[in-house]
Image 1 (cartoon, rainbow, N blue to C red):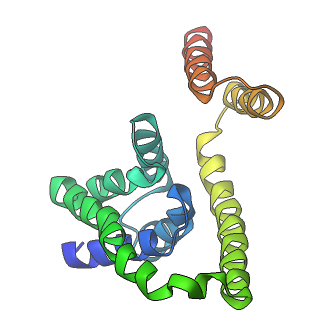
Image 2 (image 1 turned 90 degrees about the horizontal axis):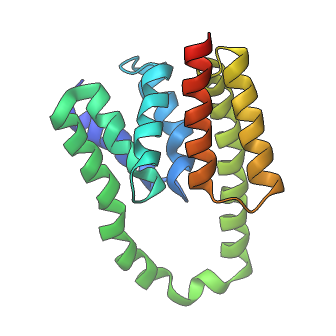
Image 3 (image 1 turned 60 degrees about the vertical axis):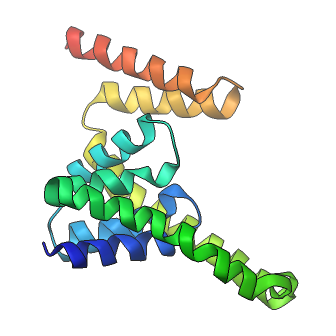
Length: 172
C-alpha cells in the first residue's frame, strides 16, 4: 500500500475520533474491508499491542501501520497519531466561545453517540475473531463482570486474564 494513502487513512481515523478506540471502526472499514491490507486478527493484535503499553489508547494506530507496511508504516501511523495534536490548538482558538453554544454542544453530543454506536458495530466482528474457544469466552465474561461489579484495577483484570489464558492453554 502507498505510504501516503496509509497516512491519510490513519489520519482520517485519528481526526474523526474522540478517544483512542473510537477510530477503530474507521480503521477496520478502510484497511480490513475496503483495501484488504489488514486482517481482523492483525487488527486485534494491533489493538492489544497498543493497549498493553503506556500511553494513549489510540497508540494502536502505530501498530496498525506496522502490520500494513512495516517500519515505514509504523512511522506513518505515528505521524497520523500526532498530527491532530498539532492541529487542535488553532482549531480550539477558532472555536473559542462558540463551543458553549447549544447547537455546537448538541453536535458534539450527537457525534459522541454516533462514535459509541460505531465502536459497538466494529467490536462484534473483532470479538468473533478473538473469542474462539469456550475458555476465551469464559475469561471475557469474567473480566467484564469484574470490571463492572468491582473497583479492581484494570491492570489486575488484564493480568488475571492472561494467567487464566495461559492455564487454559496448558490444560487444553
